[in-house]
Image: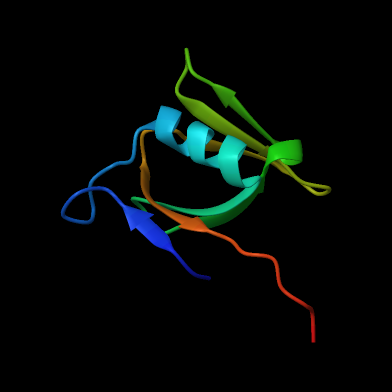
Length: 83
């Protein structure tokens, strides 16, 4: 993972709208939440409920509802060749 971006001072929540904006620009991100969870999110499997402040990640096995205001860090995930 490369190119991490955090709130000022680290440990500061990243606005949910910022996560949405970066995802729309990059197509794929890794986000870290205040409780230490990390999620790889993509444009095609992630929706944003701005009214209820929820990021919804849909995977083949589960739907994760992430507190949109708990995101502390965004990492840009770059494409790479699988070894």
